[in-house]
Length: 87
Image 1 (cartoon, rainbow, N blue to C red):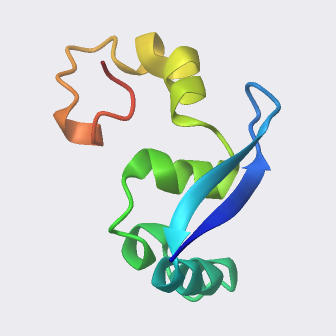
Image 2: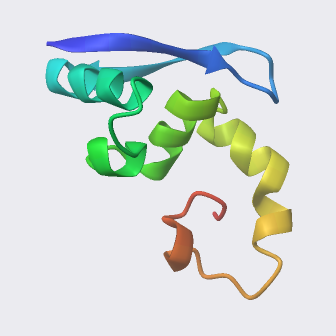
């Protein structure tokens, strides 16, 4: 069963988001909130944009629209940052 985990309000579009998590992922997310580990370690099965949304509320599309050109200005192929800023 999946759970709709509300995320903080996006700083770009000012909307609250949702990330779908399994029961196990919710447990690990709770551990992260209690500072029992790093989110990239506890939720390594989520992609970087999903983890970013859980941490800051920033939606993947909002991140791309805000930072894509700025981050990829230096000969970027997208491989060094999981495609978060590119494409």
